[in-house]
Image (tube, rainbow, N blue to C red; front, side, top):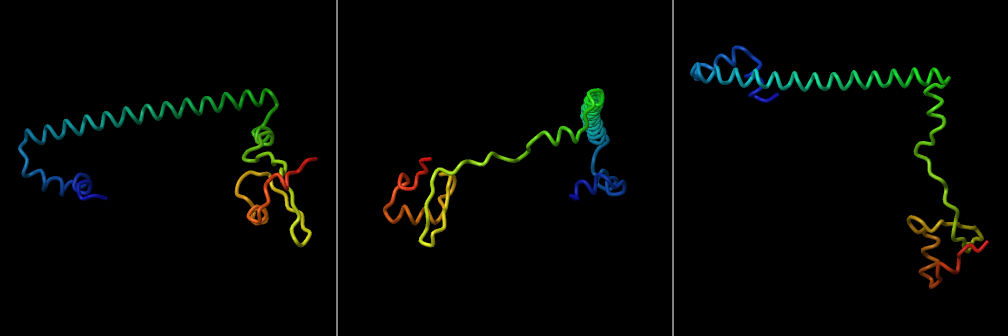
Amino acid sequence: MSEFIKTLTRKNSLRKHCQELAVSELKKTLDDLREIIEEKQALEEVERKAQAERLDKIKSIRKTMEAAGLDVSDLMGSVDVGSRKKVAPKYRLKDENGKTHEWSGRGRTPLVFQKFFEAGNSREDCLIND
């Protein structure tokens, strides 16, 4: 907490600092604080209304779902969140051990393919043609 806020929120500290101010300056400060309070209250009211509208929409959607015989779990089960289709391999080669390696051609080049290309071979040499 800053020193200013400590002073502002503690009556004795505030009184001590206000001794140096004229009454007109204190009144001006009080008016400014009232204005700030009104602004903050208005903002909180807008946020409260937005939250209430959001909750009303949620209730309405739940009623519609219940009328349709649906549950939230039905929606979650039907949505495939975060999964991607697997891309079919485009390139295939066998290493010196006879193991088959496949690559879609996307993303970082696997080391086996990188070594194959560095040895003077091209991508067309390991292209899958089936």
